Each structure stands twice: as structure tokens, then as C-alpha cells.
Image 1 (cartoon, rainbow, N blue to C red):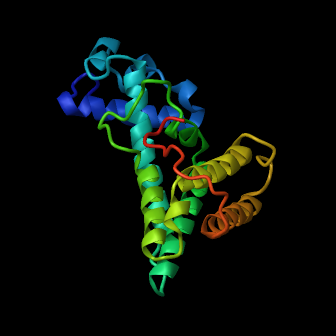
Image 2 (image 1 turned 180 degrees about the horizontal axis):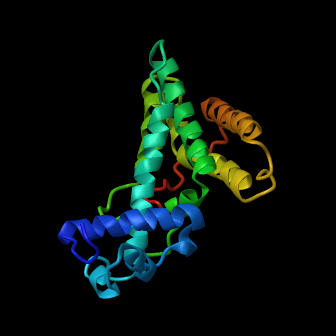
Length: 217
């Protein structure tokens, strides 16, 4: 298809694909609606017919990244042999390992996945799939009888902040100079530690904190 000869849906998809290419290398700051249009070979006005502004394109690209992260997480959630409890624990572990693994292999995308500006949400209005997977894994633990319902409340925050914090240290912090092998080992340790902590029956007595329901912090 020649530049400027896009059908209605093709140009929108091409802009998202180009946005993915830009952010993969440079993170959110590399994304520009005009630059995406230039790379495709269409006018900025043509691009603005599909995305009203920079934030709209940013939201669409972030949603695609979240979907890809969820795919990577599912790949780590391979079915374990054993009863419901064993499978549920393996599911939670896979969620964590998949999250960390995606951040390490795709740091540019990871930077954008959950930290778009205020008011910039998924175009489809869905809860981000990675967060849905985490909720499902925790619910499976409760259903299997290995996570007390009283400890389910707020567990999303514990899990999410732990793996995200480690990923930030590995991508942007003092761990960034470590080898991929060392980071993989440390990531597994972090995931195993938070899994053990979530499953511990001794609680603090605090219940019903606010649960995250969107991709914003």
C-alpha cells in the first residue's frame, strides 16, 4: 500500500504499529503523532482524523503494550501438575515472572505500559489484561483454599508493587548493570518471596484496602 493511500482502519493500525516501534526504543518520550505520521508517509492532518491528540495515540499504544505483556505472562503460566493448590500457586508465580521478564526484555514498552498521563485510559475501557491475570491468580488461590479470604483484600497491591519495584531497579536503578542471568535469578527470588508472603496466614489485621481497578497508579 503506497504512502497516503490507507483505508480507514489501516492508517489507525499503522499509526499504532509505528508508535510501538518508537516507544520500544525510546520509551514514552519518543512518541509523537507527527513523527508517527511522517514515518508512515501521511500528513499530520490524516493522522489527526484517527487520533485527536498525542494522548489518544499514547493510550492506544499503551493498550497494545499491555496486551503483549499479558501474552508474555500467560506464557509463564504453564499448567502445573498436581491439585488446585499447586496449580494456583504456579499461576501466581507465572504472573510475576512474566511481568518481570517483559520489563527486562522490553524496557521501553514497560515504561509506558502503566504510566500514561492522568486521564489517558485504554480506548476499550477494559481493565488492563495484566492486572486481570493477577486478580484471577489471587482468586484461584482463595478458591483452592491456600489464601485466606481476609488476606485477599489488598494482595494485588503487595504483588504488583513488589514485582514492579524490582523491575524498576533492574531497568533503571542500581541493578541495571547486572547480567541477564543474574537478573533472572533475582527476579525468581523476588517472585518466590512475595508469593510466600501472600500465602502466609499471619496477617496484620488490616482489611479492605482500596483495590486497583485501572492501569493508573
